[in-house]
Image (cartoon, rainbow, N blue to C red; front, side, top):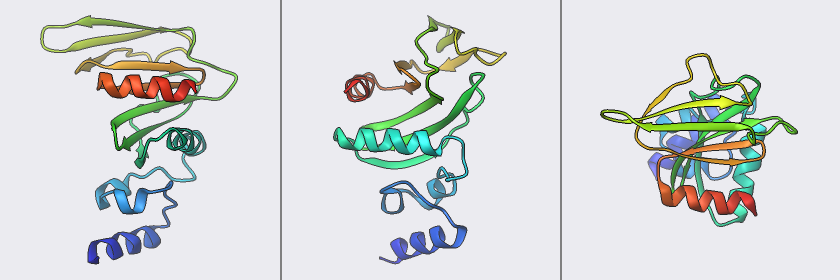
Length: 160
């Protein structure tokens, strides 16, 4: 009870306007990175949250993403924490889409290596390394997911 009151007080004190569910499901550390109404990604993130919640997802937190500069013309990016796992969402402004984007994947010595080509134009460095990822594309949204089962659930949900 004390923690909940502290989190609510923290939210009120810093003027956060969390997306639905964030106050009770986010740690104070998460809340410090919660997406704000002034962030470029706020509106597309809110729309995706509502879409996923209508399809059975429980959105715990929507946080700022470090991937906001991954492509030219990106309308924003957000990190989602859900009841099914975490993923990154990148947004373009409609009518722009990720339909012409190609993801190149190869197994490196100790990790997976990814490069991107096509439209939208990727960032100049254009290389990501780490655990294996799934890329779920749908219109103006690109979701980067580390879990195959979550990727399948998201693919189904965003196509509905």
